[in-house]
Length: 328
Image 1: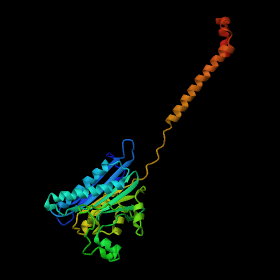
Image 2: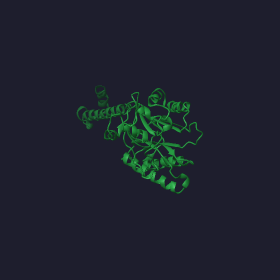
Image 3: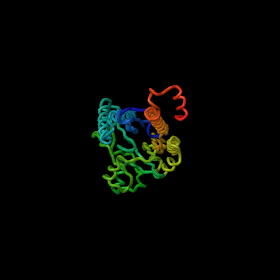
Image 4: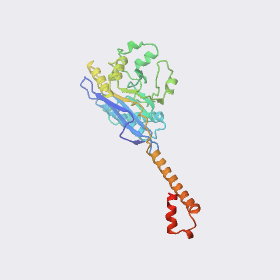
C-alpha cells in the first residue's frame, strides 16, 4: 500500500499514564494509505497495545507490536486484511519472545493489541488480550471484541455473572497475549449482537461502515473504571477530540491506576454530490452551431454561384451592381 497524509476518517487520540505514578506502557498508531498506484481506494489502520511486564518491559513489547504490525500492514497489498493481521500478530509475538530471551529483565514481557483496519468503507478487526474495539452506530454502543481474560471465560461458562466479573480478584488475568510461549491467533470475531455465534461474528468481518459511524479503540485503563453504558453518552454527545479527552478525564476522576489510551475514528458524512459543470455542454453546443453555420454558408454560396448568378463570362461590373440588391 502507499502511505498518504490525508486520512479517510476523522481521527482523535489521547493517552495518559494513569494516577499510579508509573510510566505509560500503552502504545498506539494510526496510518493512512491508498491501496496501490492503480487503485486509489483509501485505507486506514489503527492499532493500540497495552504492555505487560516490569522493568519497562511492557512498553518495549507494546512498541514492538505497534511498529511491527503497522509495518506488515503497510507492506501488504490490502487484499486479505484478516490473513495479514493474523500473520503479523504471530510474527510479532515470536519476535517479543526472542527479545525477552536476550534480556533476562524482560522475561515474561508481553502486550495486548486491538487492530481496526478500514479498507474503503469496510471494517476488519483483530484483537488479542483485553484491549477493546467499539462501534457507535445510530446512538447505540456495540462492543465488537471479546476480552481474553479469566473472568470473561468464567462468564461465558456460567461460573460468574457479568456483574460479578468487574470486582473479581482475577479480573486482570489475561489468557491470550503477544509474547506468550505459544504465539496467539488473532481473534477475528466481530460481534454485532450478544447472542451471535462465533461463526456469525466472524462472518461480520468486512462490515460496511455508514456515514456517522464511530469506532473506539481503548485499553483496559478506561474499561476498568468506566462502564459501557457510561461511555455511550460521552462519545455520542461530543466531537471526537472532546470525546476522547472526556473519556480519559472520566477515568482519571475515578482514580484509575492503569494507563489509559483512547483512539476514535469517525466516518464522515457522505460528500455532497458533485454537480458536473455545464461549460463543456454549452461549448460543444456552440461549436456545433458554428459548424452548421459554416456548412450553411458553403451551401448557399455554391447555390448562388451555380444557379443564381449568370456565367462568369457574361458578368459585367454594371450587371453585378444591378444584381447585388436582389442577392442581399
